[in-house]
Image 1 (tube, each protein chain N blue to C red):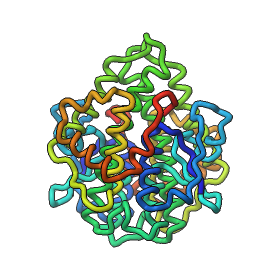
Image 2: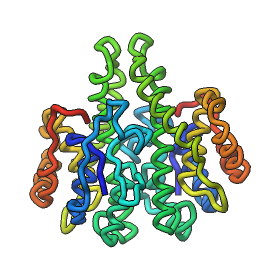
Image 3: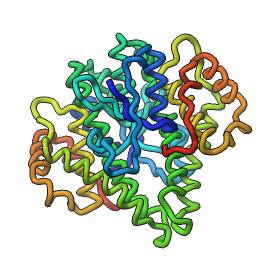
Image 4: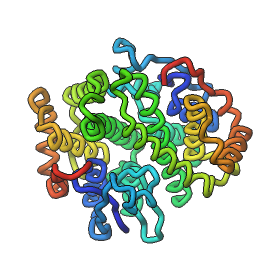
Length: 205
Length: 205
C-alpha cells in the first residue's frame, strides 16, 4: 500500500504513527505530494485534494485520516489503536475528534497567512479559531488522557495536534499547560514513531 | 439521550437522518444551540463549540458527527448505517469523508461572508474551497453511489451535503450534475427523514 502525504502534515503524521504502532509501516510506501499543485496526482486519488490518502494494493483510495486509521487497525487484526471495548472505543474516537478539531483550527490559522494578502486577514476569524484551540487545551489540561500499553488513536491524534502547535506556533501552548506537557513528554518517550515522524517546518502542511 | 444541534446544520442533519433510519429518533431529545454565543452550554459539551454533540443518558458527550453516527449504529445493534462487510464499510466511510469534506468547504465559503468584512474576503481562498466542491461533485456525477435497502452513512452524508448546497447556494450545483440530481431525488423519496429535517435558511449553520 501507498500513503500520499507530506512530511509536516499533522493528519499524515497521525496515520504514520498509527501504522508504526500497528507494525504496518514496512508495508506502506510513502509518496510525498504537493497539495497546492493542481497537476499533482493527489487530486485523482482524493478530489478534495487533502492528505493523507492511503491507496491499497487493490487500487482503492481511502481517506480521511480517521478512516485510514480504522482500516489499518482492521488490517492488523483489530483492537490495536481502536479499542475493542465499546466505552474505551468511544472515548478514543471522541478524543481523536477533539484533537483533530484542534488541529483543523491551527491549520486554518496557518492558512490565514498562506492564502491571504495581509489586508484580507481577519482578527475576528483568528480569535474564533484560537478560542477553539484554547478551550480544547484547557479541557485536556484538566484531565490528560491516561497512557498505558498501546496508544489509541485519540492519544496519537492528540500528540500530533500538540506537535503541530510546536511546529507552527513555537510551542506557545506549553507555558499554561504543564500537565499536558508532561503527558506529551511521556507519549513521546513511549512511542518512538512519534519523534521519528517529526516534520520539517519549511514544507507545506 | 440529547442532541445539541441547529436546524440548518448539515452535520446535525446527518445525525438526525441516521437516527431516524436506525429508529432511534424517539429516544433523542433535540436541543437547539447557538454556536456563536459564548454563554451557550454547547462549549461545556464540546470545547470546539461545534455541532452536533450527542449527550448520552450517562452524561457522556460524543462528537463529531461521524463518531456519533457510528455510536448510534452500535446502539441499534450494528450493521444499520455502517455496513458490517469490511469492503462496503470502507466504501461508506470514504463516501462520508468525501461528502463531509465537500460540506466543510461549503461552510467555509459561507463563513467567508459571516465572519469577515468585505475587504477581508479572499477570491483565492474562495476559489480554493470552490475547487474542492467542484472536483468532488464531478467525481460523484461520474458514478453516483448505488441506492438500495437501508441508506448507509456515506449516502446520508452526501444527501446532507447536496441539501446544504441547495440551502446556501440556491441549488447552483444542479445544472451540471444531472445524474447526481436523479440520485438526490431518489434518496429523498426513499428516506422520508431527509425531507423532514430540511433546515430554515435564516438560522446559523
